[in-house]
Image 1 (cartoon, rainbow, N blue to C red):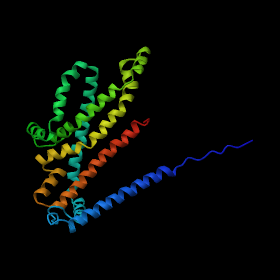
Image 2: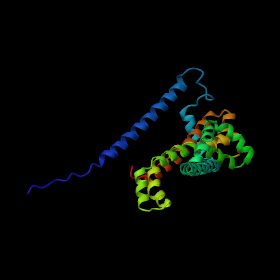
Image 3: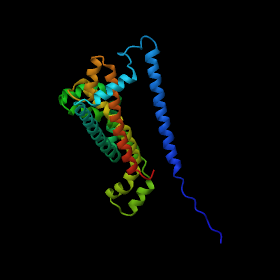
Image 4: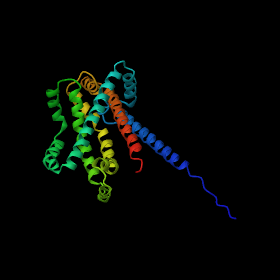
Length: 267
């Protein structure tokens, strides 16, 4: 009797792919840094000025100094709290608004023009208004971050709710399912991929709102540090602060991506 040989799955492929991606990313970063260094050292005279573009090694030393500063933890925590809080607030309002507009068509008709007008309005001009209304504490930073997060979450949540299969809804109706049962078992799973896509996009926007508000009025936070360094022409510390802010944004983005993989595991 002829035996059938079962091939073991190739587990090296994905690992090699990830390794190749990591090597390419590191190589590209090294190339950019080398070009940056060469531009500052041998580029036009207008650029060979530490106040215009510092050397990469100067930025590295500033980053080490900034990271070991006794106050940096407080500034990072302030901006992180504002970013995460604004993200959660804007996402909650966006998802709730999408649900209400989906099930109350009149509300969608009334609110859509105002929501679009709110979105096209630069959020920078709203930050001073929020500070005037809410004071100089953390509240205006949270609201500014939430205002930026709100629209992409709302739009993606509405697209997800509108993509629900009508046949599935009819089947649940024929089974005498309640509205809540239909919502939990059909609507939520169908809309979840689009909702998570909106949340992933919003995660990169939340720190921007917090920083904009910190630039205008704050006594703590990474935006406050960045503004002080810009005013004192410490460009190397400005770049170092940008690196820390980018890492904070990447951490928030990565957390939502991880949550997306856990919740939308079938895609």
